[in-house]
Image (cartoon, rainbow, N blue to C red; front, side, top):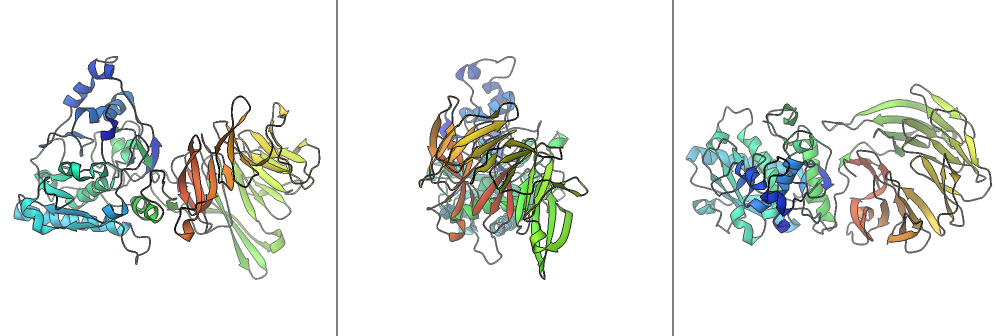
Length: 583
């Protein structure tokens, strides 16, 4: 398979990572278990006047070997998509300079009336995408589409005075407009960069306006893929992509017309930019451009802000996030806890206050904790569990540290004398699981177990079935465990060395430079000072482990991360929570 010529563009404004599907040469030549061959699949696709196969209604693919990922995904199953990537997980996007140089012409082969419609509609749609790249209204846009009317006389795919051309195409029963993506940037690919417009797409009575169609196609030009492919049963595309924002049903990149009702946008028949669409383009072309945007290892900063700043945040197993806000009221403190349930279809600030109280500063709530289906709050001297209507006191106070098991919701507490207690979910009285006293012990939540590090750096693991293990490591500062079961550590050294405990019980080096470490679904995350960042507000970086000793930037301007089954929640340096859709 010629993977250096991967299928382009489509992006939906969401992002997730997935490996590319591969199909061997035997499958190319022969029928596999009754499925059509690659050649039969290709023969079933419509083609435009350049000879390109049209997949997903508006995506051109010129050669049959380029169809192989689409074929594998559609015949043998594949994942949903979003931002297009290479097989090496490099984003297909424009550099900061290229994004400001998106010049185009509009062919004189259109009728006078149709050309005016195209010129005005494309300019209006481009202006909306351009405006969306701004974080503040006074900011300079980070993308720019420039119409060059002097090139309209020779507005063809061979005109190198413009980056792309827009020209008419005969009506086709299988597509109305098609465009291209950043995968086709570069001088050698100029002939691939066209927007083809059929007369049908210009009909004024259509529920989806031509301006809306241009908004959608510009999304493809910028690199965004179709949104609906996350939905089971919808048309699939190739499988190399990453998700920028949560699934967004009203997205401008979501289909409006489809035979499967589950694949149709549920918000409006018009293609309009949503909050998530705007957040996605800012992520790709604004926040990344401020910190090595065009390096292969870069990833987007957290996108969707969930609230104003809070004093403390926690996430339970259902991806509900809890926020504590402390407000001074004279000499007293008003503590308010709210719950956020991430939207499944649309963006929104879905916060619901569940409790608020004004107390003296000494009695005020200082933190929220969550795990399983349990919610807790902590004061300077007491610990409470939420019943759904009121708080019940947990005997023994807060100790020197408290953690909640993400899976079970069990609470663990290291007391001021170093003993450790366990409160199983649903029970009311903690049970001691370590009676020996020691100063400086730290505990870390596992997944239905507990990890501990003593003051001398010795590490141990506890389970309900086996109790405390023999020592599993020395010289350790912190421990973390993924939901997949692997244990990682941060050594107590100046280099910030990180290691993983292998199946043989030995620690293997996986990198350095960390100041904190967290577990994820299948891989860890670490926080470190990023010396490559040029902006002071982006110096704090969270990275995700890739392989070997390689870590990739995951969230800029962030100081901590909280795991969910479907989303990752990052807290930035201004104490505002953000979320990601994928691990």
